[in-house]
Amino acid sequence: MNIPRRVNIVEVGPRDGLQNEKTVLTPVQRADLAMRLAGCGLRRIEAGSFVAEKMVPQMAGGGEVFARLKNNGAARFSALVPNMRGLEDALRAGVGEVAVFAAASETFSQKNINCSIAESVQRFAQVARAAHANGVAVRGYVSCIAGCPYEGGVKTAAVADLTARLVDIGCGEVSLGDTIGVGTVPVVQKVVAAAAKMVDASQLAVHFHDTHGQALVNIRAALEAGVATVDSAVAGLGGCPFAPGAAGNAATEDVVYMLRGMDVATGVDLQPLVDTAWHVSRLLKRAPASRTARAMAALTHAGTAAT
Image 1 (cartoon, rainbow, N blue to C red):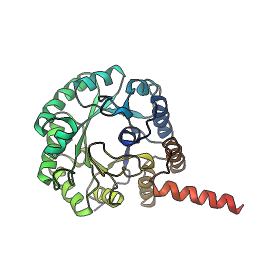
Image 2 (image 1 turned 90 degrees about the horizontal axis):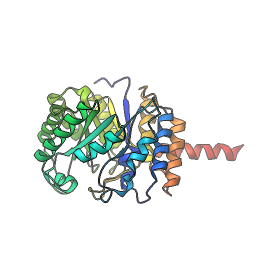
Image 3 (image 1 turned 180 degrees about the horizontal axis):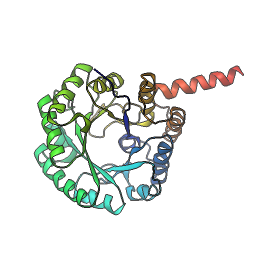
């Protein structure tokens, strides 16, 4: 199959990446990270969320984050919202795009947002209507597309059906997320094909965690199936507070390096992105999970030592 000649990257590091980190960055630091990422050429950046601070303290101060991002016209900054209250906070902050999140597993839905899948869709339908009424775009996430930490296997038909329901309530794009990183190429191919029968492939994105080291090959499988939008996180940040054992997201710099080698355009400048990966990793007091960030740093240091 043909791979898209251009891939849109949705950078989720400032939200999905940081929400599971033990070191809590300040709103100023998180806004600075989002701006640095925009400076690398990333044009879609999930910069925060408006959730209960007691549940996800890493995302506290979302209003301040977005207040600092208002004057950047090049990138579109989005926020995750769980309900109408979150949407109202996002609207007050001037957010131009919000994301809602449902799960293909009933147990995960209850653990994550304290309601059934059907109830979550009803809740998000209200959010989507209100968002559209205020000129705000809506994106949807489907969690646990390849497996659930509580139930194990997840039915492909459940993923495809939920994807269609999210589009029906007003999500312009739905990101299929392997929340615990257990997916393999055949599973990804099957899930994407099933979802693409329900909605247009242009409305699909993919979101892979790298628990078993399969994120990049799964991304390629999704691209071959017609998907042209990929979520990733700088430095491989991430995990999930409600998915024990889940590793970080596919690292944005690894994705960009791979796509550059395939002659696929992203509009992202790799070296500043690697610099940003090391910047945020220093704030978090650890090295990047990204192979590309570590390899390019090693090459730089080797070259410096040789001169």
